[in-house]
Length: 198
Image (cartoon, rainbow, N blue to C red; front, side, top):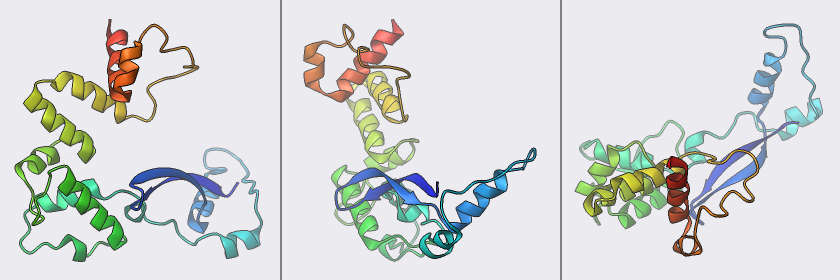
């Protein structure tokens, strides 16, 4: 059809959105190449050649320019490179300065860097975990509060695209109490896992 669903991060809202965007000319050619790869086949496009040549972008926007850079900036900061300036770092495909500034702000708010931009001990602990920085921060705090298993369960459930398959309209009836619903989504996820584990 000439379109694809693509996740894009908006630094102004701090949220990721799933947008329908035009595929690039490179992607269109690559997809056409799949037809007939293992046996005879055809590629049918629901757009004109003129649309491909004039309206669609030549290449796809690089991922580093579409996603949150919180994890990337934390990783760069933990390298201890002398004189590293992440705002002036020479990325192959430079992201918008707004994305870098947003990442620095978020890292400061979760205690991963101090007011001088240096990595804190919490930030070092976070960087060793294969999680999104906010989830890594929760795990660091869980160690201090002695609730690692519960926090790891919620982090795992938040790290996957879907935890349910099939129709889930009545799935929570009898599993999660009204009190748990009032405590928020994270408690609901934990209760769902605990019910499944039994």
